[in-house]
Image 1: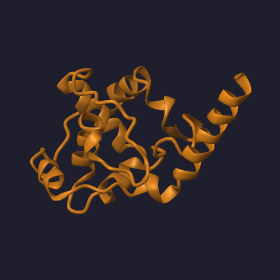
Image 2: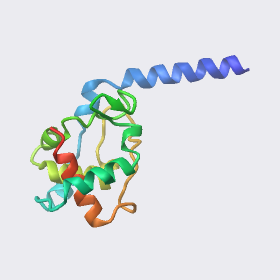
Image 3: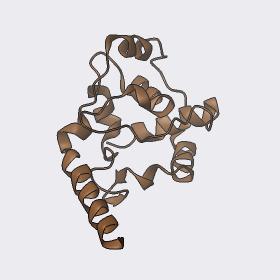
Amino acid sequence: MKLTKLVSLLVLVAVMLAACSEDALTNPTAGPDIVKAFKAEPLTNNGKATNGELVFYRLPCLSCHLLNGSGGLEGRAPALDKIGTTGATRVEGVTAVQYLRHAILKPEDLRLPDLRNIMPSFANTLSPSELEDLVAYLLTLK
C-alpha cells in the first residue's frame, strides 16, 4: 500500500516537472478583458525599492520563485532574476509596473500554458504602500 502511494506520488511529480517547460514559465497568456484590466492600472510606481526588498523576503516568494539561483524549485514558477526587464514583455502593450502589480494582486488572471496557477493573491496581505515598494524592488531585478 505504501509503495503504491510512493510510486503514484513519483509519477505525479514527474508529470508536473515535465509540464514545467521554460516556455510555459515565461509566456503567460491573457485574454482581452485581462489586458484592459492591466491598462486601467497606473503606469508609474512611487514605491521604495529598499522597503520592497524587505517585503519580498517577508513573503514566501522564494518558496516557488528562483532568484539568483536560489530559492524555489526550478520549473515551479518563473525565475525573478530579470523580471524588472521581462515584466514589460510578458503581456503586449502592458508596462512592467502594470504587469507586476497585477501579477501580485491577481495572479489567477495570468494563465501559464499547461500549468495551474499556484501563486496566491496578495491583495489582502499587502498595504498599498507595501505593494508599490515590492513592485519597485522587483523592477530593480534586471
